[in-house]
Amino acid sequence: MILGLLFAISVVTYIDRVNISVTARHMMPALGLTDQQMGFVFSAFVIGYALFQIPGGWLGDRWGARIILTLALLWWSVFTAWTAMAPASPLASWLGIIGALALARFLLGVGEAVALPNFNRVVTDWLPAGERGLGIGIAIGGIGVGAAITPPITAWIMVNFGWQTAFYLSAVLGLGLAVIWWFIARNHPLDHPWVANRNSSTTATAEPTLSPSIPWAALRQTPTVWWLVLSYSCLGYVAYVYMSWFYLYLVNVRGFDILRGGFFASAPFLAILIFCPIGGWVTDRLASRHGLTTGRRQAGMAGMLLAGCAIGLGAWIDSPYLAIASLSLGAGWLYFSVGAYWSSTSDLSKTHAGSLSGLMNMGANIGGAISPTVTPWIAEQWGWPLSLGTAALIAVIGGILWLWIDPEKGLAGKPH
Image 1 (spheres, rainbow, N blue to C red):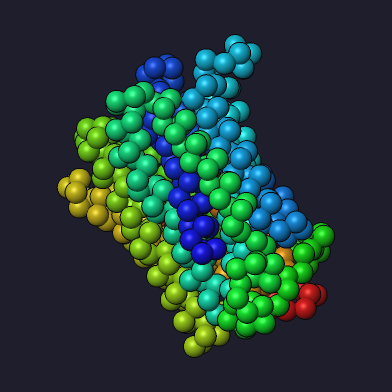
Image 2 (image 1 turned 90 degrees about the vertical axis):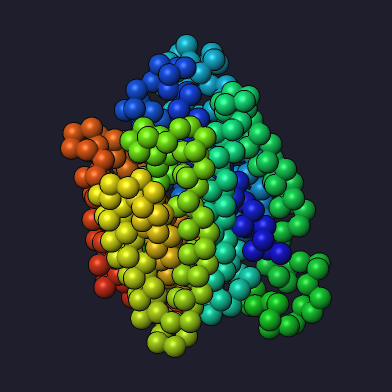
């Protein structure tokens, strides 16, 4: 039940995140925005999202995920709706349309930054170590559903009811889910009235230790933490190519119309839905068989390297349909590695799982903040094959960095 709720929240986060990449098709001419200006608006979200990863994770470690996720859902739903209102608001007369949109997306990013680190907090507290890869894979797999259904549905809403309506409807979804999460979720199995046997080892693990502070000294002294951040930054760069530009790439470069582009733009995210939990399950099995470090490393490296190969192939294929297939597999393999990354933060320290995963995900979104602006710039200078080829190379680099990631050692100077 708890994983199902996390999955649903994950769906909503990506509806709120991806819908602007589809509505941009009408927003840009309506508001007089260029590709570079729209890229700046895309990046504003990612900057807010990156900056508040660590605070969001720490809040979950300190106060528990129930209240923090509820407040976050309310916050980002408000600013999802505000995205539609910002260009016509008084704020636009002070900051300009670009500034008003960028501020709305920045504040949306601040709210959504809380989500994934707190997913990891919940998975760490509710599941035993041998199931956390699968658990976080299922939770984050909601990305695939949210991002897959968003392009076709948003395109249809945009054509029939205007681009603003897409933001209002997704905001209502978030508000409703905030109410459901608050009334059903708890921080830990032992706190939940529906847990039948409070002493069962299969339904309740040890009481969580809420951490009042982030162990900065231990983080600085643990090389694995920084290799994780660097490697996940590579994943973030590539992921945001899909979230920001894939739909427009299909429409503007590959020649699909608005509705067919929306349909085919869902393919990478359907691959994510399938590959993300599979990758989590695989890393758990490998870890139980070969040890934590080998199990996480094999799954993480394989996913990143195969993603790079598939994206590189898709970038240069002439057939638009074969390109979609190859690029979609690239997205699937990219998220195949996600379970290994997030489980590694719990392996390093269960107590600080929220803060650690927030730090790692901040790295992903530093890469993600660069990607929406750099991707169209490379395409404008040298063409889209080289732009997507750059993303493929970055995925390969992220895979190679797994050679230095060793979660089994735990944090320096801390009990494992």
